[in-house]
Length: 181
Image (tube, rainbow, N blue to C red; front, side, top):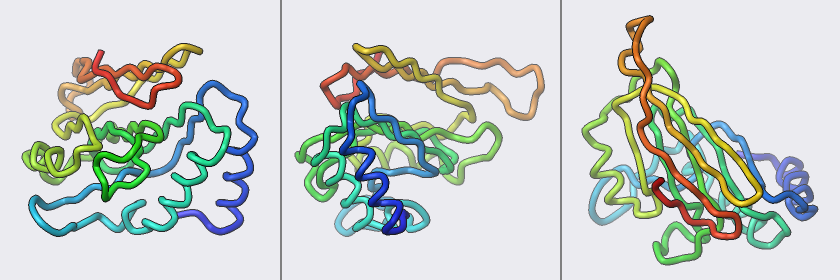
């Protein structure tokens, strides 16, 4: 996903540290997502799953630097996904290095919202996924915590459609663990 020069630049910035929150905006879902239940793994290769070595290098950079409270923000999967950034996605019990919020678009439709529950069960590092609504997320950072509110439009085909809260999460500074609020 990143070229060698980009990786080196990012690693240097992470090594500098200094901020309470290390926020990285990027274009897609970061965490590994196995798309089929049971043995074996089928991943979507048009995102970080197609570049597992690059993902592991970024995770290693997060672990080996002064980067505090990593938060990855992404999109472009037409669904909401919220999860833990894992040290090793092949070992569900491995350490959480940070958290991830990947949001839906405001108008694009998902392909199979009925498959969300199965995908969540297959990918325990994700704590929430939702594909029925289009919407956006609001992130509020303070020195003590991050609160993310996921909002969804009732009907994107109607101009006067209402908007509601789908879910809310809190992350305390110093603890890379998602909590439902």
